[in-house]
Image 1 (cartoon, helix red, strand yellow):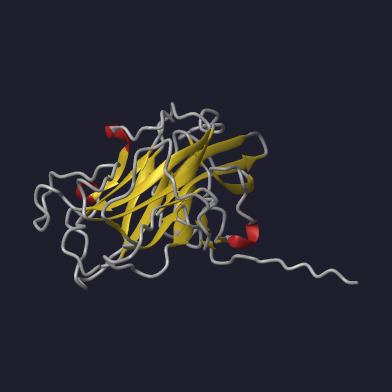
Image 2 (image 1 turned 120 degrees about the vertical axis):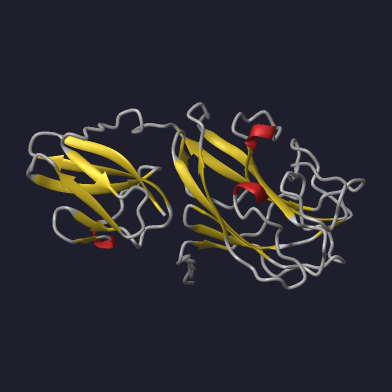
Length: 285
């Protein structure tokens, strides 16, 4: 009898995963009177998780801890990018959002761990009642002191209990949601893996030899060879140490690399000459 093996290859850096956990413990509660889906997707460092269709106020609790969704690892001290696309629900209350990351792994989302919110991104209310939708983007730096391992990331969308329908630029979404305080919310948890900042401490930033610009970069990363050294090899790595394959890049002479195809995030670049190897970092926007 022949055995048939089926393999699923996920292309386009997109993940569609089934949640495994519906209890946020040991973290605080994430259940309001009506907790339903108000997000289209979240993208971290080029990997997208889609939440499915928009929910309604009559939906059952949709809180999930997506512990089996794997985003690219990020190194302590490095910067990565989060993109969010909200829905515009038929509800006037959920104007605010927040992303928290438990950097110190104390099972609490501290005030300084609110890394993304209305007033440090769009500086406006989230769309409701069919209003125009735009992707929300922010670059976030992992503190150098963050230990290696998984850290809980929470995405929250809520209203302001003191003033449901009028947006305030001074109000911040909280990480904990309960039935006594909030009517309509959307809460999801993920793991974000942080690695040691190996390579960051070892970088040789010798501006007298090579200048890398622009940084951040959108398309062409230029390398100015100040001492006209003979370049043998140029390599680009992700923060997790994976090399970007040469065929994914287009070399336009020795001093320009087309990085437009790279996902947004932080990268290491090494320039190897006949005498030594130079290392630096750049951010792809």
